[in-house]
Image 1: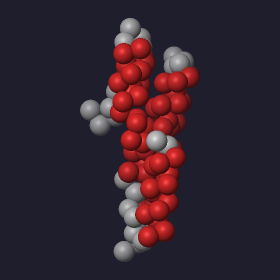
Image 2: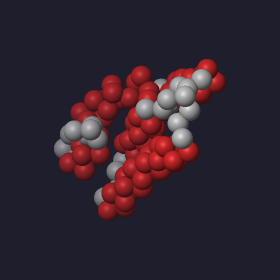
Image 3: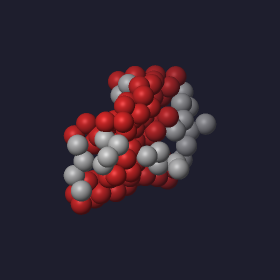
Image 4: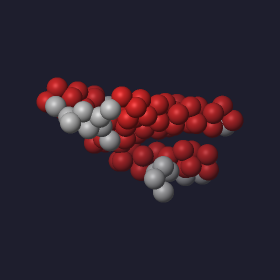
Length: 100
């Protein structure tokens, strides 16, 4: 069953809204480039993980996107950067799990 048009629009808009919030926070207090990149990747991985594989083509698209983003490595990379930037509260906040 395919999601209706409004559901697809919401799924597209929400990640963009999240990226805008991250960009606004970065404007106030710039984050290191590696942190910015990883936060963006994490957000994109979360987006793709929440997508519905309603047919084989969509399932392949989701899998390919997650492989290209190297989503399986994100958690380890977050831990590594948390250690590197432990003395910088803005970085620690940016790397925090958004679900918490």
